[in-house]
Image 1 (tube, rainbow, N blue to C red):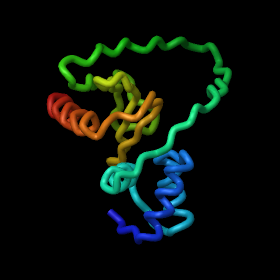
Image 2: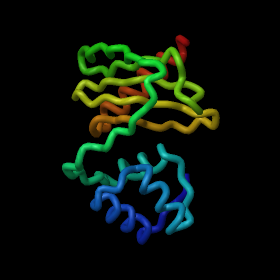
Image 3: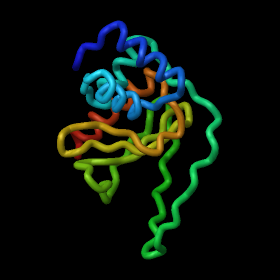
Length: 149
């Protein structure tokens, strides 16, 4: 993981306070500071320094019209039991993903995850911010799921 200076860390704090997401912080670190970090490394940087991304009520995203060629009905994700996240694998992997799936955290946060051919992890459609404990439990559940696959 690349080391960031105190000045760069302050920039990250400002960006997070402005509501810039992890992907945006990753891109700004590269373009403005010349610091190239993987997505999860940026996530860990924020966790290690207690930096939280500010959330504001954003307007609903504008949905793009897609051709009605095929309707895909997502599988319902079972509710988490006893404080453990429910992690599932997709039957059809997302484009560009080596492996992908869904997760529902005990707090109700849910989303999709993927790992690409280079081992990079990414979230998509994450409905909220899971707690650090939930993220740790997710990592353990994912590791167990992948060891069985």
